[in-house]
Image 1 (cartoon, rainbow, N blue to C red):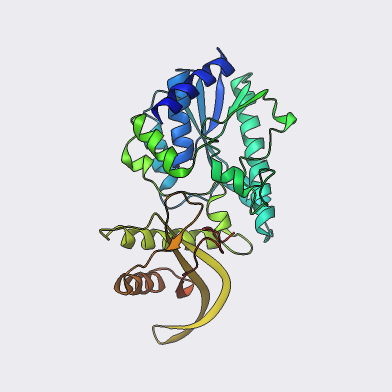
Image 2 (image 1 turned 180 degrees about the vertical axis):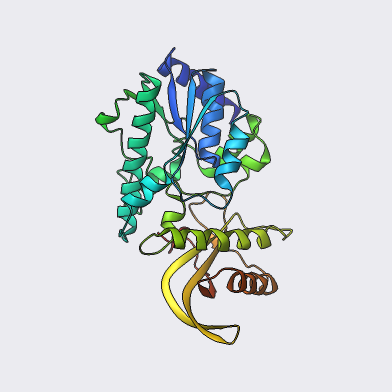
Length: 311
């Protein structure tokens, strides 16, 4: 990985020269390591745009801004939550969600790039599993990723910088550690570009987003108490509603699914065997503290046959 870093730094210098590079910074492992690698190669030439699309986890937008606002790079935070939610109104198909969000990211980046003046290069934290799952010409398309598929001409960029494209997740974490990024970033569990939009089955509303944010926060809070944590764990708000009883009264709310996996490279994964006492505590808290959720289930499917994400 040290050799990879050195070679990639030289490749970036040769590709970019003295030009500026625009990067969409989500705060996740991939985009953070991408930012660290590019800024090391070309100091003071990287402009990072953090787009709050409204699909982040609880407190995440604030955390990203606080962590990266102090780094040696130019950070621009954009609140586009209403814009994204409006675009996804009534959309239920997962592939359409991903493509709409991807296209909207392109538009936001283009709008911000125009404000900044001419920027020739766009950087993305694309990794090898993104390429494989989106179809690389050798494998079938499993799901599309918003940062895979080529550079639209209308964006006005003339080049694409993807320094992590050949690496899998475990290698990306190692690169981040070698670049001096803290464990709070390099060991952060993956979060998809479309965020909670693909962890809500069916149509997306602000009410559902708020519901899932709270439930997911409780889930992660309880899992973080374990000595051995899964490699990735999150909640999914299903489109199924069931009858329940709360405070002696009939309720009719959503089913929440919990996902937790153990994996090395995220290409294959086994479901994590979380203690039943922990799952019981999580279910109890969510159904009591989050209005609108009446039932909690746990996903015990591996990858394959399932993907880690539900959509």
